[in-house]
Image (tube, rainbow, N blue to C red; front, side):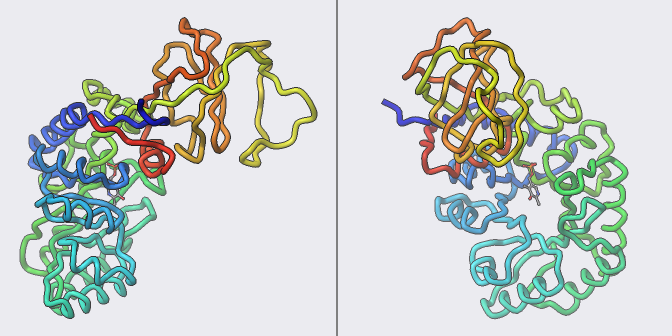
Length: 364
Ligand SMILES: *Cc1c(COP(=O)(O)O)cnc(C)c1O
């Protein structure tokens, strides 16, 4: 019998999604860095990206790139969270590329590469307004690029990149991509040669690709979310982009077990304070309704809003650390203890579930 909760990864569906996303990019002359961080860096997922034509494997965690390399993936490894100075020896030993946005880190990376007798490839990040990583001032970007090119002999300036839609919710529009292209031209003029890489962002930067607004200069996207979630991706749910509708949203399926089933009131009985997370919750009195209690909770998946029940009519009512409450009054199915409930998953739930030691991953 399968151990529960179980997380089922369907590699055929994943590869089909990867083929679709990498195909869109190929048609726009864009190479894909396959981002594995949402799966906790599963090496089998890195292998899928390699088989489907990604040109780099990327993660925000160095250990995950090391694991992918050790498992025999042959692609260059790209560290997409600016490295910690404390991990530079490991970075230089195991990664071919890193995103960089801080002069001290860049300088320390150079020193470490020289010490190791290696040339490390860097992509300098420019912050186009999302206010996470990157040089926000164009002149500073150009100056640091020129300094990297002329002085930092342990580094190769491979390109320029940006990231949008993470902290500041800034949409990667065609305009923002044009700005990235023009910054790239400024750097190229300063160093007197073309750059190999112009990295235009994450899954959300597919929107300007769909709209044929991506400048020809942008030739790399760092793609994660969309291949794992399909239509449950943000560009569908927040921006209504139907282009993703042919992709599978069942790459990852969660199976959780019912531990109590029956009818209860919907409004709590007693004096109300705060819930398990310390928040003042709002409860709607809908009378007595059928519900199921599941042996999985926030500790495993984070936010219950990121679970999409596969039983028609079921609704996630709420959760504490180790329990999830499902309203099943309107379901045709009659659940009882021992039954399994299956869910599709949004991005953050996949991120947490692949990292939970209570959850067993099955690959099919
Ligand atoms: C996570 C991440 C990505 C991938 O984003 P998705 O939304 O999963 O496609 C790309 N670039 C950076 C810097 C990231 O941190």
